[in-house]
Length: 388
Figure 1 (cartoon, helix red, strand yellow):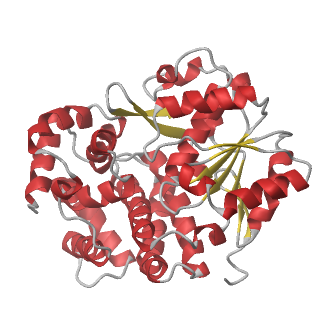
Figure 2: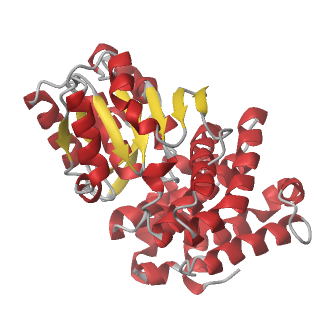
């Protein structure tokens, strides 16, 4: 990796970026006052040397570190509750959020909840719920992403599923933004090609939906445009050769850029994906990639002008909406993305239920065209039939 892909950033939070920076984990934790952190991740990562090595380095540096890994791929409130119990039982004073979106989201939620007396659903991102948080009770967070998709490491929210209602909820508070992020592309080199593709498509959707969301936010739009260009240039390379550190570094940037940009808003791709992920436990990035072209087609009247600029910026063959659509479909084919949600196990007889859930998802309000249950069902039906 070139030395240019190395540095310390503050956007939107301090980021230590570059190969080998994971060796600075103990220093990062100590810099925010941690003396006994709890590392939270998923079971697959917990079994890998990268986690045991990090804990061993921390211990050697005088920073005893616990481990909690009871986290599902789509984390549920019980994972958070169990994490809080482990945190309190171990007398911990901070959280290391390690992993992809599931691990980092769960860890951030644990850090939020360790000092609260309400249930996690009281802090759903609706209205002014966030003002209920006891700010003094939120634990400090150091985030270490090991995928390049969600960008949760630079976000102020977590997506947690309610097991009882099979719905995904966005839990939000500004203090959930990690105090320090370590982006080390060496930690991503072992990610298999399919997961590299799925998480990379998640980063693309974040940038795309942020770019298309209504409202005035040119800074977010600029970040989203460059994020999509990085995905265009570097995701195929990362999928082809996971050891390509340069490609991995650029994709880590694209993921963080997507999460930075989507403070402007997301849209119906996420609205359709969240219920499917919650009910069928599908991979979030893959599910987004399946629904993306169908939502694009639905939104075409409202986003056509923006597609002219995007096609130019990406230097796509052709012009406008058709060029962008062709590019997205080509990416999906290249990465063997399922064409319809039928391939994810979605059942026709549940579409109305899913449509109601999608209409109530907080991301629905960011769609370029206003959407309710009927519009969600139209998009679900088009996707099920593979109709563009």
